[in-house]
Image (cartoon, rainbow, N blue to C red; front, side, top):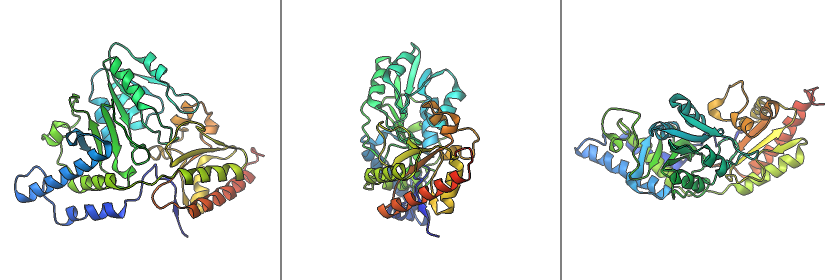
Length: 365
């Protein structure tokens, strides 16, 4: 059976140019970038070229990029590396929320029913001891985009720093780091391998390290850098990007037209062009995921990091959905390799799966 992948917000296929760029540093150029001999200096040059590519992608200085093991570590370093009270939101990724619970001393603000966080809510949550505001750029489940420049202004007016989790925004929308102090990205959301990410740290921002050892990454992240993975991230950041908004709109319109009792979550809110989250009344989301998987389509009922959780999505609950509504929602996320033909086949599969599942659910009838 031919397979079709519509879960790019969970992870992305590694692009061929990224593989090609990485392979020489696995096969032959194996030096430690901290060594002073020729093999080490060759590795150092490759590492710094990758850093330049990531910096160019984000529009910042090369020295402001810290390589990490992924988005989670980048978020943890930002949130745990600043002392003081933190203001964040209830729809953040677990990498931020769990870090906040670990450190304590924080306030969470709720979004509106479309998933947009209000600047007034953040402003009201600020305290004299607030040191950091952390609001994600684009939500991983809804795709909703926040106006992060406004939150940065609120933070700076109170003498605090501003961090944004940009893992789901990078490669999908233009990135402008004006006013942003800390910004997280992840390679495997950008068609690079898993295990690499980066944190933008604006020059002059003091950040306490979370790992201890050597003075790698200018003393901000100890541990010998993975040159092959850094090279892969750099190459991914240099790739041209496609706009999937037309395909996303075709998918939404097709499903909403063909399947009754469906609702587009966060309709009307600004969203990244590759993501849609649709509620199917009377259908368990996990059942729909399995039904589509059997038909050859990979989709998601929530964040991949929460897969298998009994509880409904904290994001969907935060925008006011009931437990039943949250558990009947499906995320479709597009990316490299998706085509009009695949979209049309997915619409047909969703239509057939929904009809089948509802026939099996007497409560729905």
